[in-house]
Amino acid sequence: MNFGDRLVQLIDAEFEGNRKKLSQKSGIPYTTLNEFAIKKKRSPKIELVDSILDVSPRINPMWLYTGAGPMYKRDGGTQSFGVAGMITQETAKAIPLIHIDIEELSLEELDLTIKSIPEKDRFFLPRFQDADFLAKTTSNSMAPIIKGGDLIAFKRILDFKYIIWGNIYAIKFKDQGIVIRKLMPGSENGAIKFVASNDVEYPHFETRMDDVEALCLILGVLSVLR
Image 1 (cartoon, rainbow, N blue to C red):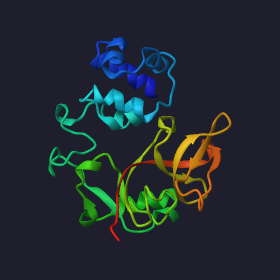
Image 2 (cartoon, helix red, strand yellow):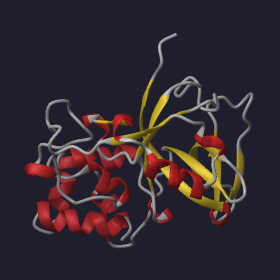
Image 3 (spheres, one colour):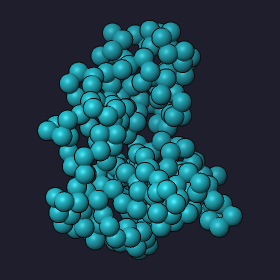
Image 4 (cartoon, rainbow, N blue to C red):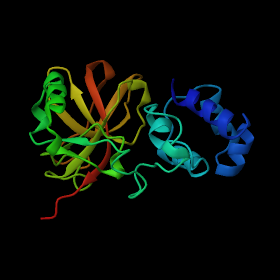
């Protein structure tokens, strides 16, 4: 299911199948909605998705962005990306914290590391309930947005069709380590551009999705005060 499919499902459930209603409430042009709902255009801008979520408060943002999780927030709308106090420790999941440098791990080593994390190193962070794991980064490729030493909340993306251009991801390339970059369309059809904020030390580069082994969406960052 791509973004267009999820949009149709949302419109059917929340707007009685009427795209004009969503257009009027959100301010998104009707023709733009049709590009996704009918032509199944895959990669919306973040601002468009946010406009839809603003008028669809019951919808789970992670589901609309990536297809992960249920369509609706838990408890009929009390769960968001994590307003503190909305999710109790009884209903929240504990997120494993990886203490070692993940940027040098293979995919198999990363999976084994996550499974082996003891309970004392699993944390309840309501704001990052959709995260699969937490880890520090040693890279300054996305500074000043993400700095070396910051703690990052990662969400594994299993279907690469759900990439949202302009978002920051951790990318595991085949036979290489993990890099953190903003993803943008490449100059050639099917290519992806990997953009660093700190482009002086980390030049942009392009490659095809076939070279990517695993992908994690970065949900948020806990910065370390120095």
